[in-house]
Image (cartoon, rainbow, N blue to C red; front, side):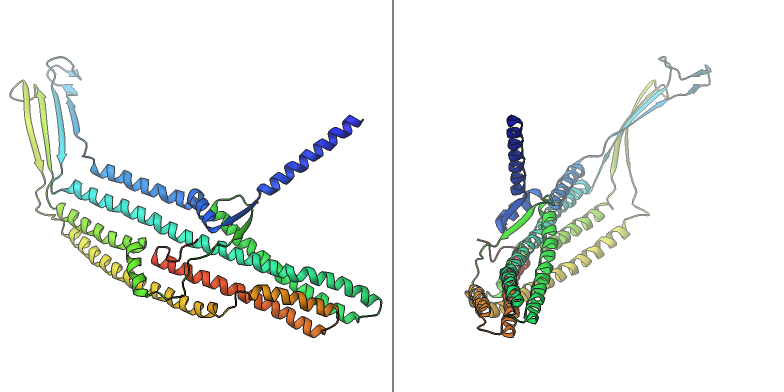
Length: 423
């Protein structure tokens, strides 16, 4: 019996240890650099976009390929003289032809150039997608961090408030404190719990989006540790950022590449006006004036009715259209950069006015106020007023810090490189 009990105890200990181990495995604490590392390795959208690059490179191989030669065989089906079907003897007629199309005007080279531009565009589209997703990743991770900070700030007041209510309930039952005061405190606690619940639900939604981007299991419990930024209060000239953006923004480079590509398409359309040549040779046994007849064949179109004027005109219009798109993309790039710089200037003025010790000071004062109220050194109205002020001001502090990050990341996004890199 003792052995059975000992076995059950050991089994329970093993199960408890295994459950605890699994629980620890489901908790994941990430910094931004760690999140980006997982993102680059596991994000399914990036995996799919990488395949587009391989597809485009395969199209280059195809564009370089020559047309296949054409082989034709002709066999007499019925001999009227001998009344025989499909004769196979040496007296039967046979014709064999082989043709090869020779493309003129550099068509194959021009198609290869177009395919190469498409491969470059596919690479730039990959980096554009990565840039957009990485910005979304950073924003979500920082948003989750501040939501978790807000949640903790609510818990820091909820737990002392719960203990305070328990003490006041005992005092109310003894008749030392009015019951209405306990009711007001309970209402205050209910409001705080509702605020905490709203934040937790919002954090759950943000966490779900993060798990999708990072390709994590849904049961993973994420905790985000916010890193520091290489942030300078000196405002950089946006004109410098515009130059940087023109060099690093892949979406802008895509429009420039497409302009080069439509120029190649125009050259190809003009080359289509140059007739291709089809060379061939034919062997005819017993079908001509001599028993074994060999012939050299050459054929090409005569550009009389169709000189591809429509195709050339369409390509010219497409080139003009793409030039407009390049100009529009450049204008949009400049507006994006100046808009991001203006937002950074605005939030900097607010952030610089913040006291870096404000958060800790507010928590310390809140503890002091709670103790003062418990000792009845301040009134319930004064306590509630500071309680509400504490929640509101701490939330505004977190929102301001998040707004600063968003402004810095917007600069990184619009320029296409980390002007304010993560440490």
